[in-house]
Image (tube, rainbow, N blue to C red; front, side):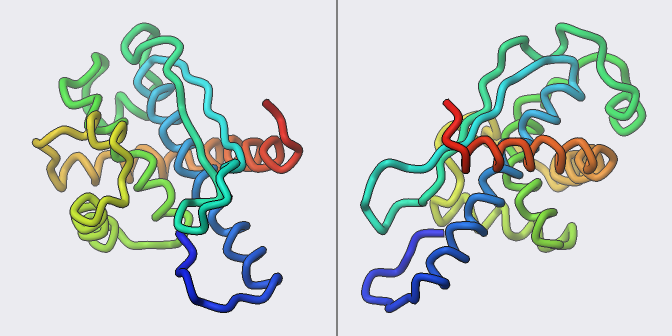
Length: 175
């Protein structure tokens, strides 16, 4: 969350904001990674402190780089059960694109309808990265968002473990 210029924050409040932002960033990237793996691919996620001192920018940055494209390996049973198929769906890029936003919302305890409405508002307000928007495309549906919610909920323990590892590494300054 960008810090509002002119707002006077205590050191403790600033640290709390940055910690929350780190958690959201880590869960965002971990959720992308989990969807890639569920769909039979592999990826590496990472989170790092933004070196910029611009207070209008987020304090933490992240990425999830695909190393093996979805559909290369066998899809996980959970994905097969949720999707009702054992082949890569045509909308896999959309599912991957919304995964980060959905994961961060699940972290906050948002409900499905709030996530759906939030995603539509976030894209209008520029809160979704250009790379995520590129994956999402123009044909997103409520069904796509519901599918990602189901997939991430079924594998939430794995998302949490990945996110916790990303946060530990980021705080330690791992490359």
